[in-house]
Structure formats: structure tokens, C-alpha cells
Image (tube, rainbow, N blue to C red; front, top):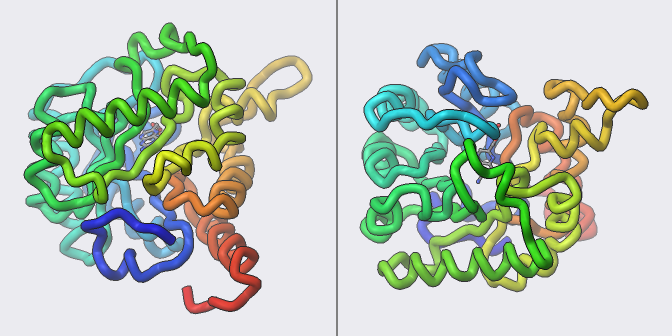
Length: 289
Ligand code: PMM
């Protein structure tokens, strides 16, 4: 497995796809909004995800659900920093899901070992300069605009090549600000300015996205396109909490394509799936992880 530079050794020694468990410390995320807003609830959820096999815990304080309003800087810091401090103190590998450089900086000071930026450096001008100063992996996601407008930004000539090109442009912007390219992980941003069909085309194109030469992260967990795929005959989408088996199927597909990490809400079956895929890829030669 090709890992980004700056990853803690314990993770960098793993040969399989990593599993990132999600803890949204928000009142309004589409899947777990409101459940983990209290720091104690968030830390308890993180412990449960780690016990279920999460390699990384992704802590976010701003919902990116379509239509979600922005949260202020102070509120975002107040939500995530105490949780990150606690989880890092307990020995978990924590990533911070934020678009703000100021939050990324404070989070790394509090013990986060990775920054996950859904805006790929476009959301806030302080992000890329901050990342250049830090020495942790940076997940750079394909993004075209904030949650209130993203559903109107789904025009592509060819979604796979356009997303690849736009990701390359963001990598160039990061390099121009002295971000170490070896620390960058790329993510096509499923559901962010993409309709259902476009998400499937991107997933079908994992091998093409790998040609960008960076580790990949896939975040499909419980997203709307899975709800549509599994809709009732009358068109009622599959309920959010009943999308985990479909998410796990995408984990298996991603792991067979040697995606670096998957980001999921329900960890247990994905943790099994990445091990199954690794055993399949190696013909069972490496069962150490
Ligand atoms: N999706 C969400 C939030 N953060 N980060 C990355 N890197 N990739 C994603 O696909 C992604 C993300 C939205 O899901 P949530 O509201 O359930 O966290």
C-alpha cells in the first residue's frame, strides 16, 4: 500500500486499505447529525468505532449536507478541539474534517495526525498556507462550492476527466504554496456537486483516478446515491441507516482497487471487507493485519 508521507508509523506499516470512522460533532449532519454533539457522546462513539476496527477517527464540526449553513470559526473550534484532545490522549489516530486552516492548526496542536479538507483548499484562503506549515497528511477532496450551492454545480463535459483535471489543478495550487506533494491524498468527493450517475462513473473510474499518482480516499458512506439505488418500487429512497451494507460493498470494491482509505460511519463490516480484499489481493500470503 502506498501511504502518504507524514502518516504515523503504526498506520504506515499496514499494507491494506485503511478504515476511517466518522464522528460528526454537529447538530445537522445528514447521517449522524445531533447524535454526537456533546463531547462525551462524541468520544464514546469514537471509542466504539476504534473497537470495531477503525484505523483513523475523522472528527468534523461543520456539516456538509446539501443545503447546510456554515458554522462560525469559534463554534467549530469549540466542537472539535476538546474531542480531538481526548481521543489523541487515548491513543487514537485522529483526522480533522475542516475547511479552515485555523481549525486544522489547532487540531494538529491538539493531537490530530491528519487534515481532511472537503474543499481541497478552496473553502478558506488560510488552509493551503497552513497545510504547508504542518507535516501531516492532507486529504484534498474535489469540491466546487459550499453546501448551499453544490447541487447546482453538477455540469461536467466528462465527469471523470473533469474531476481528475480539477483535482490536479488543486494539487498544483497546493504545490505553489509549498505543500509537500507526498503528503497529499486525493478524494473525488462523492456527492459533492455530483448526481447519482456521476458518483457511479467516478467509482467505475478508480483506476483512472489512481493515475493521478496519489493515494485515494473514498467517502461513499450512507450517501444519497446509495439511497436512490436501493429505493422502493414507489421511489422512496432507502433510509439513511439502512445503507450500510451498500456502503460495505463499496468498501470492498475500493479495497480491491487498492484505494488508500475509505471513510465510513459504521466501521465493523468495512474493517472486515478491507481485510478480505487484502487477503484476496495477496492470495492469503499476508494475514498479519
Ligand atoms: N463526505 C462527507 C464529509 N467529509 N470527507 C472526505 N474526505 N470525503 C467525503 O466523501 C466526505 C468527507 C459527508 O458525509 P458526512 O456528513 O456523513 O460526514
